[in-house]
Image (tube, rainbow, N blue to C red; front, side, top):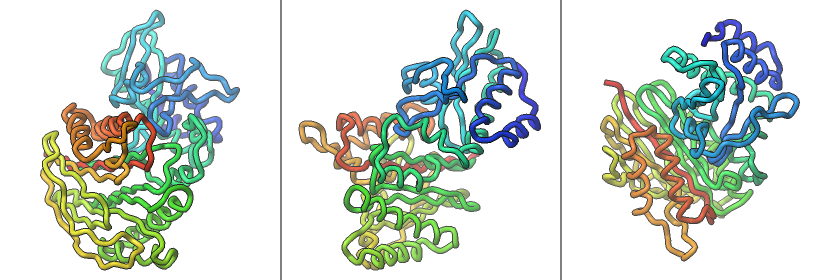
Length: 390
């Protein structure tokens, strides 16, 4: 299998309109020696891979692919190339990566077998597809529409537009966030961003439900991002979020949350807590402790910052931040999910020796299954791990 010439690929991505980028990408891949090219994107709940139709509205081959119960779904869930022998040669499914985030799979058929060079070429095509989608998504709603398996509420739409990529990664660390219910989330949100040698993380839970809750969390998140980008300290960022929320809503509304800064070189995590559940420390596949920081009042209640805590992580450690909707969810029999079940779900997934983003997905799947996928409150989890090289 040949690789598309780099300059030609770049020109193809930039010279066509957003609606033509996928056709151009498929043409490049076919010229490289592949056939039956199809791009699938994962839906917002990350349970189904949905094919992008061609310009005529057709899909070849037709049909969605479940995650992980299909070859395409396995490629996405396991973050690795999956191949299946067919009468026509070898059918290959390779993850599509946009930056650090896995957003779908690329399917193609090779006429013969699959050697190591072919595997590398296919993986590179997955990266090329991710670059094409990232570029085109800036000026089209096509990919967002494909990912909608059902109607999304207005609060959820506002929240998803505010969210960063679900995963950011550096050679030393990664942060992955997931939130449910994907199509009706309201007051929960998270953020993560790398600045120099610092990985910044935030998780927030606005009081109430629906549109008012979404507007409240949007205000708090906007204040956080503005001040973080100005290089302000966690203490000042905390105080200014509190002032912004109180200034807009008085003391009639509040937001709980946590802000953190991880030093990528030393593993030192500095964080503050605004009335939010204590995060979990994961080491060697086990939850060994909850991190403690004297909780301040939630943002908007005009309290003082009580503590800025410091936790020294060891290589391989992970910190799990979560909202109360995770542990306070109830089964059909009225039984609370509770912290012990969350710990068990995390440990079971963490011992599987899989990527942190897959660990988080499996753990949150356990939360959803317990409640029969009928959440009464938003459930958000943010997984931060520090794994420096060497």
